[in-house]
Length: 595
Image 1 (cartoon, one colour):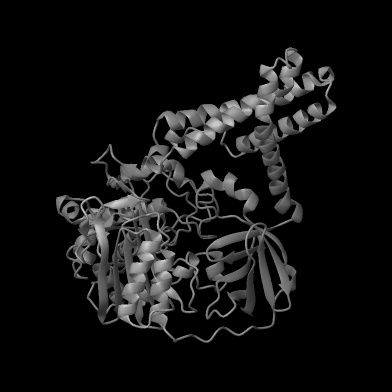
Image 2 (cartoon, helix red, strand yellow; image 1 turned 180 degrees about the vertical axis):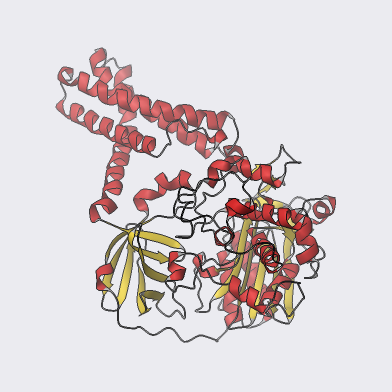
């Protein structure tokens, strides 16, 4: 079926997409600056009772809470409480954060809004709150102060960080004198006529709330510690009120302290090195360009915010050029909602296309080479990403080709001032910048790449690939060694030493993988058999990998089979390299229940 041409066809296409993506229930609303012009509820809110989703059914909006937090902060700024440039250390010295660069680059309010403070994203122990229902906002922030360690010069690059919005929620409470949820309800939701929506959890919300699902399983409702990062409950129709307010530049409803200039200022970043170099694409003040995270099939610039939380996904987007927008809310967090967004943006765009940017001369041909991504969202996972987070930039006349070591190439053309756009696009998404701390850097879709040598680009991937190969070979030959052991072929203990260490290291690695496969996000920050097994197995992997190599070397002269000796040496060295890599990135002896 082609692109829907009518609302009836769109409804049919959305139903089909729901079936394809195994989405139990969904709400969709389409709006413009005058208000909603179409909305519909689909599917069921509870698979057990088969109760239908209605347009009044509440969904969890997740991070789509953040535009409301940003509006509340801007309202307080316009009321004179503080400014975008105010230092966090001055406004809230009681927040426990650390900043190596505080002397010349303090964390400011604008950095919290744009996710450019350099904070880590929230750690496992600070996800879901099931034990401390009466915890204050400040206590919720400081119980995970290790995530508030500034990792690079504040404002230099973007990295999505929920703790920053937790701090903004605390600032709202401190400078308004109201609780975070009460302030949002009174000063934003009520003026926007979002009468069902609520930023707090209560019995009224629970009575109207859809069940959430992960795959086909229902998930219990769990509150989050950092409530300002994603606690809103709403409907697609009511979230569309926010969309109409933003599209109309504040004329659709009246929110005291929020005018057209304020809304416009929220739609583009300004604190990063890339923004200061002229790139307007990225994460602004609680509003971002959706193409940062979506593969958009139109060349229009869609603004808005997505949100995901256990059992729910939300996407709100609007186009200033088209004067239209959409909200989609689904009650599963494992669906490919991109398919729904593509349907909606394609339908709203129709045949209206913007003229693509013109290729311009002036490309700096010296920018070619290898670049590594240097703004990980979460420091814990950097070891998993590091070998693969490299692109090779090839310059060809007025275009550059971004070639990741693994993945598809992306062709960009120069549109002036070292800014680059995808072919056919009406706006640039990437730019080269001269960063004094990183030399030449390149930012595209919020990702910050630093220039590196070819050796630095390839060495980690090659070494890790060889070590993984050795692990696979050990796993393949393990049954053969066990069979030979049972047949008494290794009665000489020296021959057994040649192989035992690798076998025990593989067993440790297998138990570690088993524990991880049985660990949910909720369980990851708690003390349980999975996290204890990960802790113990990671240590055993290191110990047995070292003993494996020691065993091979000590039994080298006693093993008559030359091929077996060199095979054992290769696998033992590979396992030790892998274990050392894990140790380097702090994965050996990792206690997830404290992280």
